[in-house]
Length: 236
Ligand SMILES: Nc1ncnc2c1ncn2[C@@H]1O[C@H](COP(=O)(O)OP(=O)(O)OP(=O)(O)O)[C@@H](O)[C@H]1O
Ligand SMILES: [Mg+2]
Image (cartoon, rainbow, N blue to C red):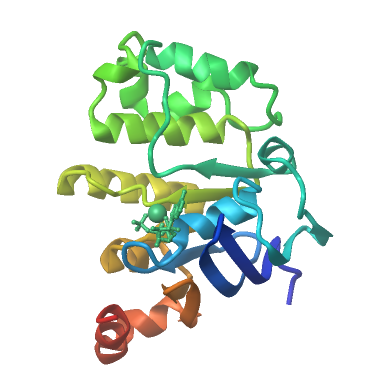
């Protein structure tokens, strides 16, 4: 068994006095696509924010490639190789698609496969729209741009927070296919999702969260094959 790339050990995270995560543990190995599955408000985003150092855990450990990264700033975590695609798709609305990507290129991220040219290969639509301002893109186009921008930091692990949220079914299908392409290219992915189908189409392993804790974990295949277990877990 290879060492996990990311290990989250018993983290407790709060926003001020409001406690949200109650001892979440999980791991992601190189090349895996792991899904955090759960409804509204169970703590998926907070788990990702805890890993990134955006909302540091009050206790527990976040170990990246064997090193405890507690106390690092989000910028340092990104430099260490973890890329975060937030659920609110924060692009620059006044800048064009190309300018948004150029800002990412200049952000001094890690060098590697991903450049403006290679993200255009993954998302040809972004090249077509390169002169359009971010604020005039559709939700799906903004999501592509957000993913593209994060890829340009050449992360080893991509955290994708509810990429399908609020998008039309055809756009969701397109995104699922693109994320599948990234997975098949060997990128390690931690995906947060409310949609069981989206999750099971992509994931190797799944953690089902409930009220800030892991309620179930196991291979995605087990949930694909076992309708009863799936319904039992998603009824929560
Ligand atoms: N900035 C904040 N301040 C206070 N409470 C917060 C904050 N952000 C989230 N919470 C609370 O923490 C809990 C977990 O929220 P979180 O965003 O992690 O859930 P989620 O699983 O990502 O949900 P969603 O599917 O809606 O994105 C919720 O009860 C939420 O109200
Ligand atoms: Mg969320």
